[in-house]
Length: 230
Image 1 (cartoon, rainbow, N blue to C red):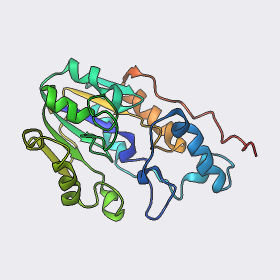
Image 2: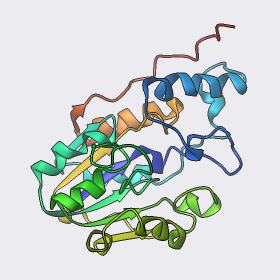
Image 3: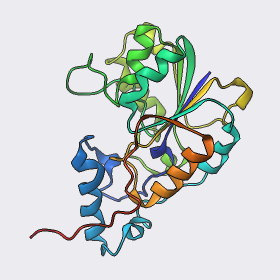
Image 4: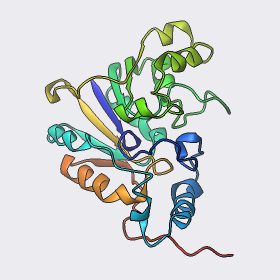
């Protein structure tokens, strides 16, 4: 089994935060830094910690240290996951994530992107079975994919072939797997969706796991929200 962990499963948001990326965002350089600066300015902008009330770091990520000793990688975006899958082809994948990453609603569906890497991996045979394990905090966030799993699966009916969808499980429950069952771990930053206030915890976790970088994550730890140019 392969274990993929998107940091946005832990670096999340609360209900009714209408500028949260969970409502929809692209994955451009602007979205990874400037958009967070704009959110910080709306909340006082002393430093990134001003984001914490609306964009908390949910618990559970601390348990990932159980995978110390398992071959681990860290990367900027799930668009980089293909090289990881090619190193461990044909295995079952458990993806702890705020998004299913099975298909994108717009653009070229055959082009590898953060939103479709898992679906393309299933189609190509690089992934045998796929489980998206949404975080528990989605249960309190109606706009989130993991709030209504039946609704999310219905949306996938028109996006994935029946054979592919038959190898997909969506869940909001489940424990992290036994490290003895995990061939490799991929830790994904997804900075367009994750608060800069949580970069320190992310990089600490990557260090403790001994992650080798696929694409270097965006280090925003020493940055502060820059003044707006009005």
